[in-house]
Each structure stands twice: as structure tokens, then as C-alpha cells.
Length: 514
Ligand code: ADP
Ligand code: XUL
Image (cartoon, rainbow, N blue to C red; front, side, top):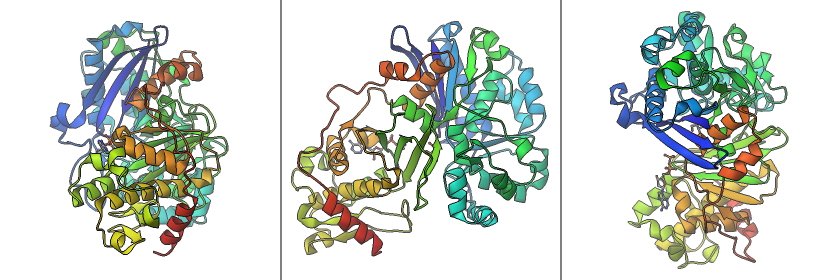
């Protein structure tokens, strides 16, 4: 049996798989807001941050880990777990002093993780991926190494506000003494892996690439990026390693407290998106995942580490080897909800029945589908831009607006992921809006590729459990075949003979005109 742990923005979940019986044996989730109200973080972070700062209390993640394991121990016999894998929200960082590793080596099963580890934090709160407070540091880092294109060439992404390097630079600038006292800077993933294994764990190539510090081609810390970020950084960073590489046996604390076997192995954790790629069964290039959540995210496996010439996309290490791309679109469900509410519609207007009132590329109408600032492309939109018939431009017919919004969103994703250069065989759709067959049909049509949805919703935790099985010697592909199955009747084929080439030309020229 293998345990996968995913520590995401709003919850920490555990999922147990059994390869022999091909079954998911247990799933437990601790919701940070509901289950741990004492941390005053209803959405997993501390509200009220100023100037774009979004931080979380790292003690919250420790308490959630204890709570999840406690609940899990009443559902499964944890002595049967042979290995643990994991993932964490990307980019977030945890800062500890030299006492951390001694404390890890002496965890007392009669106490709890927060009480024992809290004194070692040198930065009381952890910046997370929603933080946008480091624009100045991004500019400074890029200038020091020769511009954003050079940062992207080295690390796979331009200098990005939420990425860990700019966050570390800000900490060094604002709290130099606390930075000095910091002996190790972990990501959320490597922090939790350390806490379970009782020693400093490495950062994997997937999550490490989300820091603007790792050289993508060498898979080592990039000396110039480190020098441009903060002094003496090399000695404060964990080692880099492939995800699922064995780190150590689980610490005795968990053996005594929760009944784990002393021989249970802990493997190197990764980021939630690389873990999702594994859990969706989409690690092989040619398959792509589109997640239609609060924002929309596109990610896919890639062989070579070529980067986005427009500078919007990111390249990370793929836990299966090679690379993966990730592109985020801010106006995802938020834009679909804005349009729905503006016209007082419900989701049925976005279903096939609603869309059947119009035809694809209806009257040649095109919409830039942005209700607020967008990151891909980076532009401060405040409302959609429309081109087409007068009636459409006036926003008259709700059915026309819904179709143009969905087509515009898909055209925008397709256009901004064209640099990946891999023909798409299959699209795996996930996230809250993926259950909508109308939206799924538009995705299939615009991309001219079949769309499938998977049986399991928590793909990061499943990916973490699959990585745990790899730590224990299983083949990733074989375990993916057992667990990453499409839901029955979930496949949607592109409409025969339909092509969006002309619509794409119109979309790109409308985008260029604003
Ligand atoms: P996140 O994980 O980013 O918080 P989810 O993946 O859970 O978000 O997606 C939530 C969103 O899914 C909601 O905000 C809502 O807009 C959208 N959604 C839910 N049901 C439907 C539906 N039937 N059709 C379209 N969108 C939907
Ligand atoms: C990716 C990103 C988020 C976080 C949280 O770059 O910032 O997807 O990983 O899920």
C-alpha cells in the first residue's frame, strides 16, 4: 500500500492506493478553513496582506499533517504502507534555522509537530503562490543576469512575482538578520517531506523549476541566478533530485504515534502540478491537461526544455523524466461566472443544449474573453473586447455571448501554448467546469482533439500516491494504467469537418490590435 499526500492551497489530503487490488483504499482531506479555524485562514492563507502580499502560517501545514494522519490511522492499517510520496502547492517557501534538523531528529510522539518545530522558523509566515508583491525584485534579478529572456533561458520562466527566488530576495532585503539566521529554505513540498523523513529532504526538478533558481538544462542550482537573488544562498538551499527518489525511512514519531512500519520509505516530494500530471496519466508528450478551475491552467509533458518565446509559460521538470510546460490563465471560471451573472443565466446556457442555439464561430463573431487583468497575455483588461456583427458588439444576444466567450477562451489557450510544438492526441479535462459537456465540446472543437475526463477528482494526491509506488520500485506507467482511467462515457470527439483556423487568425489580429 502507498500513501500520497498533497498539501494544496486550501486543504491537505491523503490518498492510499493498493496496486495489487488496483483499488483506492482511503481518501482523507483536512480543510484549512473549516477544520483548523484557530489559524484564521479561511482560504488557507492569512487574509489582509498589503501590497500584494499573500502569506500562510507554516504551522497550519504541520497541524494539518498531524490531523490527516490521525484520521487516516482510523481508516487504514498504516503499518501496511510501504512508501509515501507527496506534493505541495508550488512556489511557497519555508525558512528554518539550524535547530530544525536537530528537532526533526528528536521528534517526541507524545508531543505534536507544531509545538516541536515552530521555534525553528526564521520567517514566521510563508509567502505562497498567490503573492504578487515582488515586482521590484523580479526587475532587479532580471537586470542582474541580462534581462528576462536570459532568466527564461536559464530557469524555464521569466522572473515571476510568485516564484521563490524573488520572494527570497525580498526577505533578504527586508529582514537581513532573519535571512542570516536561516540555515535552510524549503519549498512546501520539501518541507513536508523533511518533516516526515526526519532529515532535510531534497527539492525535485519539477518544483525546483518554479523558483527562478534552477538551471533547467543542467538540473542544478544556477550560480548566476543565485548570485542575482541573495548572498550565501547556495548553502541555504536543499539538494536537487528526481521526484520519488527514496529519502529515508519514516521518522520514529509516526511509527509510535500513528502505527506506521519503521521500514516505510519516504520519497522526494514534488509540486502539485507535476503531481497532477502524473495523476492524470498525462506524463507522455502528446497528452495535455486543461484544468478549468478558478483560473484555467494548461499543462503537458515535453521532451526538450524549450521555453515560451512570449515569456508567459513555464517549463518544469516532469516527474516521469524530461520536462513539462504549464501556462496559467487568470480569467477562467471567473470570466465564465461574470458573463453568466451579467446575463442572469445558469450553467445550462453553457451546456450543449444552450450552445445549440448558435453555430460555431457564429456570424464570424470573436471575443477577447477577459473581464479583469490577465496574465496570459499580461494586460490590464477590464471587460471583453468584441469584434463581429453590430448586435454582437452591443452585447445583445446572450447565446452569442456565451459561445464567443468559450471559443475566445479556448483560442486564447491554444494560441498561447503553440510554442510547445507537440501535436495533441488527447486532452484530459479537469477542474470544476470540466463536468460541463458544452464547454468540453468547444474545447474538443477548437483544439481538434478528443476530450476525456478521469474517474478521480484529486489528481495531485493520486499522483503523489503513484510517485510513492515508484519509490517502492513500481513502474510509473503500469500504475498509471491501473488508476488513471477515463470516466465511462466521458469522451467527447471533435465535430467532424470543423476547423477554427480562420477564427484563430481573427482572434490573433484582434488581440494584436488592443
Ligand atoms: P479551484 O480548484 O480552482 O478552486 P474548481 O476546479 O473546484 O476550482 O472549479 C470551481 C469552478 O467551477 C466554480 O467557480 C464554477 O465557476 C465552475 N463550475 C462548477 N460547475 C460548473 C458547471 N456545471 N459548468 C461550468 N462551470 C462550472
Ligand atoms: C503554478 C501555481 C499554482 C500553484 C498552486 O505555477 O502557481 O498552480 O501550484 O496550485
